Image (cartoon, rainbow, N blue to C red; front, side, top):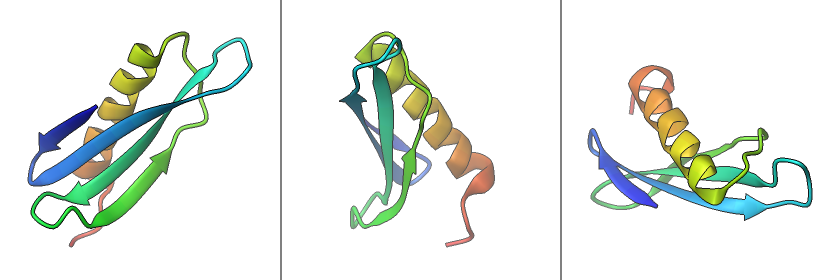
Length: 72
């Protein structure tokens, strides 16, 4: 999944593990114009489906942009 948000490109992929909640999101935040990677967020909490993991990954990425990103 890829989405543009406030001048950034958010790319969320999922990774499968053999556990009760097997899907975890991997979030990459890039500058929109250059697609230079500025942050990768690894989320250790797992979810039942890849769709759930992607939605959570998108939410935490947006939150990082809104309140946690360094002044670039």
